Image 1 (cartoon, rainbow, N blue to C red):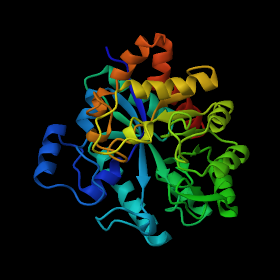
Image 2 (cartoon, rainbow, N blue to C red):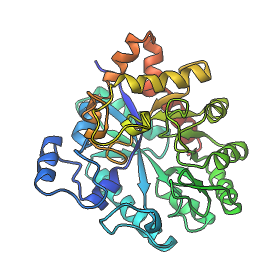
Image 3 (cartoon, helix red, strand yellow):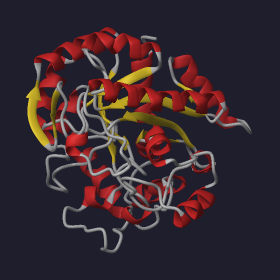
Image 4 (cartoon, one colour):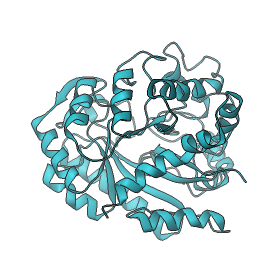
Length: 354
């Protein structure tokens, strides 16, 4: 039987709220609908993610995001952008309510504690597998002040990235350089009180180093690639990779052509899937083991099918990476670590406080 997969970053509720995608549909039906009537806004190509596809690919746990986009740094045309903290809060809350509706309908299970995680994993040995949702916030703009962290935690939040690309009042982002701010340090203190997972994806490098230095809780980069293979501030330097590994963090590799090759353009041929394995292997070589790398695809957030490597037409194809890793000489234990057990170890450590 194909082993389980953890995908640490998917913008599920953003796709539903901003783009109107019905993730309960079979993928072929959703694509047919969108060929007839393309969704508004930042449409990134043919959809790759639906709940049936996640189940078909045995993607057992997902890092489901709350993602809101600032008007001053947006390429969205759907109108769903925020101009201030109140709007960011309201838009994230609408996405949260979408997750609640999906959970009520039996499409996924919130992972609020380790009992939830183990129950979700056990369900994959039955005829009714349940997708586990680890709720994370991609950019902390919806948290209007640090003292609100507990309010979000009560509603299921278990991980926070201080900044998206455009930056926030808490820290600079990869497209808007800036340090960790005093407000950001206050937010980290509030997060530490709940042992939330700190996600450094999108943080400006100096802010990321400082956040890792001062945050005592679990850490990760849910969706980021090595800068050594693809230059640019969105990627992780080897120093950051090593610092994450020293904290027993995990890095989720993004199988997005532009994240793998700086010269790739939208009308270019899709890259070979082996380029994803090269990124995985780089993290393993820098850290000295397979313990600190996994997957964080950002499918349908940063890309659609046309922007993914050849052979990765939906999230159900992620298991192909296991075959390529085996061909590269990785052991069965290494492959299991990369596809799921590294993330499960980190999630268990995070959820142990709840």
